[in-house]
Length: 328
Ligand SMILES: NC(=O)c1ccc[n+]([C@@H]2O[C@H](COP(=O)([O-])OP(=O)(O)OC[C@H]3O[C@@H](n4cnc5c(N)ncnc54)[C@H](O)[C@@H]3O)[C@@H](O)[C@H]2O)c1
Image 1 (cartoon, helix red, strand yellow):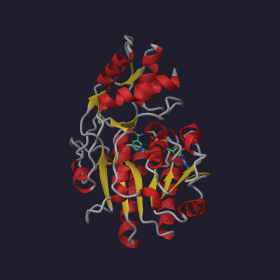
Image 2 (tube, helix red, strand yellow; image 1 turned 90 degrees about the vertical axis):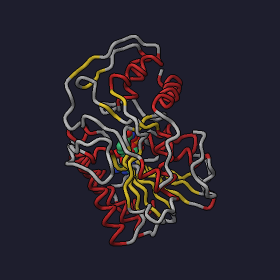
Image 3 (spheres, rainbow, N blue to C red; image 1 turned 180 degrees about the vertical axis):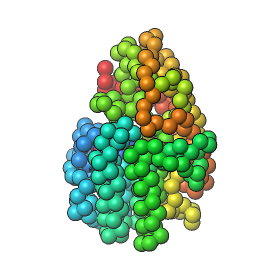
Image 4 (spheres, rainbow, N blue to C red; image 1 turned 120 degrees about the vertical axis):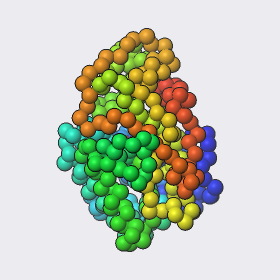
């Protein structure tokens, strides 16, 4: 990650990254380490994250790792102690996982979120930035997606993220805490794991292409997504910490690139980069999935000064390089 997205000196500032051992969280931790943040506390129970994602940073004097659970309110209070900025990334990802086990998704994504938000308020943190999701658009048919126009959620996961936004808005109004929600659209990049039943499509395609095996594509593969390289998600968090536009706080923002690819063309691209000629295998569509997804990012451009630096093709090349090093 070569770009710098902040203008402040970070050396006096203290950050808490929940889910910091996970995919997006660990990339954010890396950015803060690289730019000399005063303190970086990571709160993660390693449920879907990996110690190896943060191992290189654990011996640094400004990095602290709390291996603990956001479902415990006292843990959240301790984690927020002495913190200026929170980025709340900890959650159970995956729509299919939430369809299979809605209780687990609710307890971590909804109750755990409320624990963190309440703890941040109690400890008077300066700003609380959190991961929402494009899934909150649900069945709303219009493209591109604009923040104010959402439909009905299509999965327990989407309900949990919608719930986050409702709580954040109420806490902003009621308690005056500064909150910013980031609706990520299909983020991908280094540290995203291809392992487990709920792995995301890009790591699965990369693994298949490198192993010259045939990946599964759900449905006809003509569904579209606004694939977002992780450096753009990191940028959004950094911009959200420090945005000083008077209308910037207590808002949600689309975080994406503003371009869409079909799943079929995504696989063609990855197979081409990896030199695989193996065709994909189509199977039934998944419950809870939306058909098309494309973001209008003009609100984040205007109020957060968020400008994506890496588009899908360049991001796929960087990710493949990382995969070849770590998963062959
Ligand atoms: N990756 C995407 O495309 C995407 C898209 C939309 C939204 N999001 C959201 O972004 C955030 C980060 O996602 P990610 O892709 O990095 O997923 P991830 O699974 O890699 O990271 C989540 C982290 O949270 C941790 N965690 C889970 N439950 C916890 C608990 N009870 N207590 C403490 N830590 C816990 C996990 O161990 C993991 O390290 C999540 O909130 C996710 O819902 C991700």
